[in-house]
Structures are given as C-alpha cells and as structure tokens.
Image 1 (spheres, helix red, strand yellow):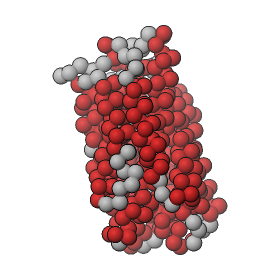
Image 2: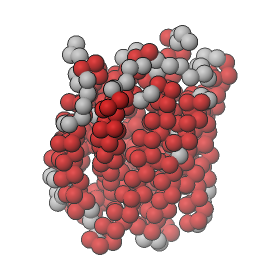
Image 3: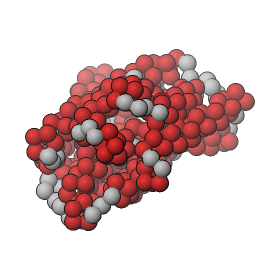
Image 4: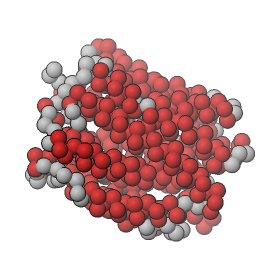
Length: 399
C-alpha cells in the first residue's frame, strides 16, 4: 500500500501524542501520590503499592496488544488506547478510597500497555529514515513523563490531586476521537502497512544468542528506567527538600525538566543510529548509565539533579538503536508481537522494582543501595552486549 505524505505526517503526529500521553499516564501518579499521602494520611509505600497491578498490566498487556495489532490494526489499537486512557484517568480522579483508586489505576496500566507494541511497529513501517523517526517519537516519551510531573504539580497546587487525573483524561479522549475520525475518513490507514527494509533476518544459528542477550539487556535497562522514574521524586524530596525547602509542585518541575531535557537525546540517538552501528550506540549508552549510577548513591546537592538527568538521557538515547535491532531481528509478520514481548519484559519488571523501592524505603528510608547495585549490573551488561553477533548488513553505515 502506498503511503501519502499527508498520511505519514498524521501518523507521526498521533504516534508522538500517543507516546507522550502513555508515558504521562504511566508516570504522573508518582507525583500525585505525594498529595494523596498528605490528604488520606496513608504511608507513601502503602499508596505506592496501589499501582502494583497497573504497572504489571503495562507489561503483561503488551503481548495481547501486539498480537491484535499484527492481525487487525496498529492504528486502530492506538485509537482504543487514547479513549481507554482517558476514561481510566478520569475514574482515578473520581476515586474516593484505596479500592476504587487501585481498580482505576489497574485499568490505566492495561490501556498503557497498547502503545509500544502497536505504536513502534506503526512508526517503523511508515517512516523513511527509521532511526530518526524513532528518535523523534521517543522524545515524546520523556516529554510525557516530564509534562506529567509538571502539570500534576500545577493542578495539585492550583486545584487538587483529582484534577491532575481528570484534565489529562479529557485531553486523551478528545485525541482518540480525532484519530477515530481520521481512520474513518481514510486519511490514516486502518490496514497495517509493511516496510521492505526489515525482510532480512540474522542467520538461524545466531538467533538464540541474540534473543538471550537482548532479553537480558532489555530487562536490566528496564530496571534502571523503572527505579529512577519511580524513586526520583522521593529521592529529591528526601535529599533536597530540607536544604531547598521544595514543595510538591517544585519537585514536579525538577522531575519534568530532567525528563524533558533528557528526552531530546532520543532524537540525537536516532540520528546516530541511522549513521553508525546500533551495537556501538547501544553499548555506549549502557556503560554511561552504569558509571553515573555509582555517582548518585549519596549525592545530596544540585549534582543529584545533573547526574540524574545524564542517566535518564543515556537510558533514552539508546532506545532507537534497541528498537531497530529488534525490528531487524524479528520475523516480519510477528513484529508487533516481538515488541509486545519486549514490553512485557520492560514493564513487568515494574512491580518488582516497586517491591525493591518500597522495601528499600521501609528499611533505610532511602534508595542509594539500589542505585549502587544497578550501577554494577549495567557495567556487567556492557560487557555482555559487546558479544552481540551482528552481521555487517545489520549495522548502519556512516553517512
């Protein structure tokens, strides 16, 4: 099927908005919970655990979402995601007790699971410069986390924590209705489009080794991502609030700045991935995270913000390389399913990360040991990724 330039542009817009909103909804609870903690008088770790099933569903739901996307429609699944996220978020804002909030957060996690298997396949099969397109789209994931924290802080300060759920929910529903209109009018294809560039796969005798390495790598990187995203607002609260007298909204602004600025590195990572070896870009990003995690173990000044930003930037910038590697390794007709498997791994570590964070806070009131542990894990991962067998045809060429 021929893709028109207008259809390509609309796809880029909706894919970017989907990535932004998905990550906003997956992350803003970590700021909102600070306000609920004050109002409901429950402990932080008790309220944090209400997101346990939701975070689990973000991962588990990726597999059926990928399967349906391959067999029905990637763009149609994104429209369903927008509508489901909006309704679920509004229900969170209307929750009056822990049980209703738990159920609503769980629904939110389920609809969050749709984006990555459907959205990434949608992008890689409709774009011309794939690395650049993935990099541009990935910017909006970091921006979504940042804007979620930013607007949650503003809405909590100016109105209440309920508004921090309800207003984004309304925006998501309106976006879903617009995408549905473009699908119905034919301006965006409801039928899946397949790109020719991913038809060649690695030799079969390499597939097992590649699969093991990529699964280990995705798991380790996901732990770093989830632990930082979840614990960073509280770490800043613990280490900087006393000296800087920070409010909840100001903590939200700091987290927003970290994820928005670092999110821009996705685009740079995408450009580099189009020009150079995906393996080299991937390995550099991993060792960068490992080294810097060791630095934030006990920081309690402005350097905590700077180093945290750099870690998140490294974590974000290698996503285009990772997604391109997976696209090239995947059988063509199961591409969304493979991305679904990736994000089952990626987000299924979320509940484990929550347990580690909650347990760490319960024992020490801090998260420094986790940062130290995963700093060494990333250094070990760097050495493993260097053994990744990639043929010359699977490596980008300098341009």
